[in-house]
Length: 132
Figure 1 (cartoon, one colour):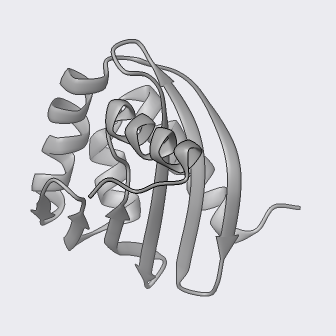
Figure 2 (cartoon, rainbow, N blue to C red):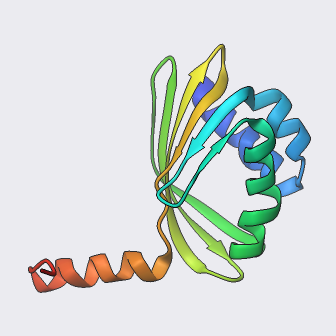
């Protein structure tokens, strides 16, 4: 038996992979939801929908696969780390936190960084020295 958070995330992936952004916004996001990333903040379901349906696919291309690595949830928060393979970016790591109110997202924190930036971090870790 899966938990609410697991079901919620499975539904979200279903909406995204089928391209049903209207269903995603209607069923999973509050109208005044915000998405916060290292690059930008989207305010409102319409702005989030535009990012997910236009901006992100232009950058990443088609999603070819996904593997969940870490998942946890409470009554009002879902956090996860997964690797995603896309046609334009290759494999990258998504680290997200979904803050829920009335079982819908009102804050979506997306901590994904571009694969080349992430590789720089790992190379620094391998050397045991941080850049000055």
